[in-house]
Image (cartoon, rainbow, N blue to C red):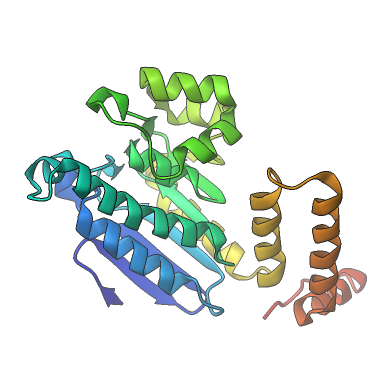
Length: 260
């Protein structure tokens, strides 16, 4: 296990597990956590990793930016927040563009940048007690952490406007209905369900999963023909790979595939 001050980080073969670990501060993001999350994300962006599980320790998933740290910084709030946001954004960019599947297990309240972090998962499992609120404008701030990119794509501009301007709080059930999370489970089964998904994704074909992530990420910026051309190239690369050959053979012979 790699030691960080604000994160638990463990790599186990194709699986990397990350837990935000500032429970006494509601896992709020200070400069150290943002910097360590950026470093942790870079460690996930390797060929050996097929799935990353991100969650929080304690009662909260993440309460957003650490306002006390912002107020105390000798740099001034503006410079401090810009540095924090830069590191957080590098982390999110790496998570978004790595080949590994990202699973987010939302164990409690997700506010501000915590809400933003929850949005970036490929698969998002929320405990029934989890809640979601943007919270930025309540503190006189504006959204960061990629929320202005992901949120309107997930729920539409009108609902994104409502969440960002009014700070409406969504329950886990609301979030599922709005399409923000993949599924909601009882609190005491969250870890078990997240782990089951992690194991499932760790046995999937890596190139196939990474191709899905890349295709969806670029689908809003490409035209139809450009997207289809990339689809053709990616499916050809998958079909020609060892995992692709294994998957095709397993399907034809009615057996379970054994991907690398």
